View 1: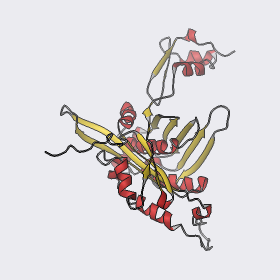
View 2: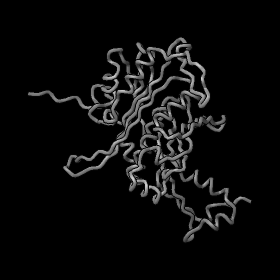
View 3: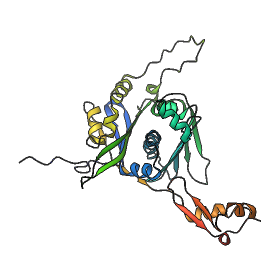
View 4: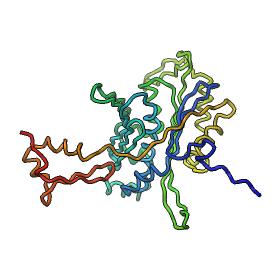
Amino acid sequence: MAEAAAALGQFDFAGDDHVVPFQVEGLDVRGRAVQLGPMLDAILERHHYPAPVARLLAEVVVLTVLLGTSLKFDGKFTVQTKGDGPVDLLVADFSTPENVRAYARFDQALLNKAIESGETEPEQLLGKGILAFTIDQGKFSQPYQGIVPLDGTTLEDIAGVYFRQSEQIPTRVRLAAAELFDRDDAGKPRHRWRAGGLVAQFLPEAPERMRQPDLHGGDGDTGSRPHGEDDAWLEARSLVETIDADELTDPLVGTERLLFRLFHERGVRVYEPRAVFDRCSCSRDKIKGVLKGFSAEEIEASQEDGEIAVTCEFCSTTYRFEPAELQPAE
């Protein structure tokens, strides 16, 4: 009799919606990897995004989760794109210790035109603009923001540029999203979204080993660049670049199996996984506090059918208020 195959979530597999920290001591590499399933699917299906938009937002959610779970303090980490393409805004934030939310804004007419012409690559949908990373530790500290341009490459490449310029840590990011069409336990057709990602960073004890070749200065730059990359980082980066998008999203592979495939010859150690959840930070009290700052004229203008309705763009929850509940600012 054949033995039952081990399923993800058993035998210490983290399963979906769990970030797995890892370390490869032989290469001086640390990182995190994740596969997102039900959590991501709930975020995307709530808004019924068109597939090209959903795919982009899924990658932003993965990037946010991978970086946000590295925070060593209570706070919020936000990833946001703003561009001049059909998808002009993508935003996802991670609130410690485990809450994730995300939202996309797009121009339906421009998106339809892009789809008809086959221009649905990330750089074509986002256009020119910026990718911003914001760390907010609360009201007692100033938020920190790092900004890099949307320069016509993939989100994972742009994230790598951010780490090179702002953090000066050799970093390789991999992101992928996929639609799955299968059947549920009752045999009914089912559509789901999945995404996965990995971030690997070179963190040797000797900081001089982290030096990277200087960026080219553009036209007229004839300077030499004697500083090559460390052999250990070259090996680690090459291994990470062998990952197929299917491996990052395949529910039968799983995060730990993927890490073993990549680094088993060097020895990879995984640490306690961290679960992440689809939870919005909005509340009736927060919305009410904002509305109480409105003037009498603004409250009057905001009414419809004798009430004020505010819908959260992230979770689509609608909060309704009677004008009498709100005391206008004097």
